Image (cartoon, rainbow, N blue to C red; front, top):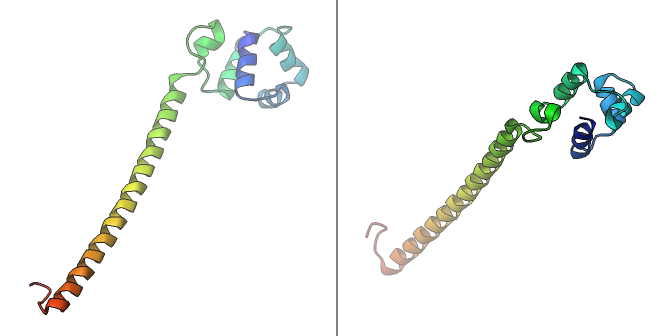
Length: 123
């Protein structure tokens, strides 16, 4: 299990000292967890899973399944969809502004043309 703990720390770019602080344990104790000298019991597992809620408990305990739970995948997908929707709205807003500018330009051309020919705006 210590190899899976090391994988989490590496993935999240977290040093042993930082994990020790989050767990409320000494550096040497947590270092022992990462190198296999100290065993990882139920309390440590619970602490790790509370600190890293996106870690799949099944993967951490027995090494089966995905390292991260589907919740983080779903959150990432939702954030991606929201970002894309914001971008699309901004693109639509830009297009609407262009259409408005073009409509104003066409209207001004129509007014100029009607003044030239002496016809009214309706005419």
